[in-house]
Image 1 (cartoon, one colour):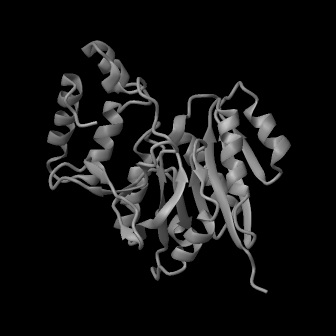
Image 2 (image 1 turned 90 degrees about the vertical axis):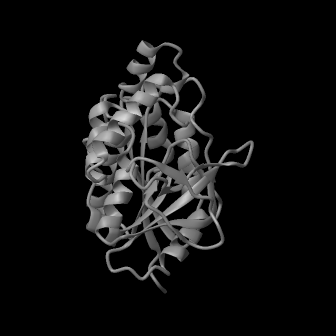
Length: 280
């Protein structure tokens, strides 16, 4: 009898106990031929997330943060811990994302068809639970000169190569994890997932959107982003907050992944943000 495929999920959470529990329940209800575990960074939750997870899931290693990590740094810490434990695959999973019933079986099956020595990354696409529209997944470059412009790819009936990715559902092979290393902790909240995929592509890892749909996840609610702010001063504060697009983070990303035009891309981004004309 062959050994079960070992998958370790990687999550970070902050005060979303019920959502986090639901995400873990859907994860642990996956295929019978899988050896499942998880590492969760609880970044200073005050709603009993840690206690609830530990009471229900003995397979979850819970790490504790102080509330300052946000998504990227929380995921980086959890991912590093997961890699130290070892697995055949690591699954990045947002704690507000519910996996489709056969998602892991299908992801593992497709990953096994990728013959790339440096490993593979498969991105699962999510849709809105009400409208069914694509919400998160893999992305392709959408500009010949702007290194920060991407468009979401609709999932099809076969693998599709992509450049960047949302970190909601991402299956990373052990070989790919070794090839790319950890997430870059320079980023606070956003851009760490895009950066990881772009770095992976540069070292020869296959990065692709998996076929079909792999889960449900609503988009972040309206009123929580910089473009929802009425005044320029409020918009500027929102842009430079950890959950916005801080100037240093964006410059770091563009310089790493762009050519000589990256300063122009940086300037154009903030001019459009302040004018409210950036495409949403």
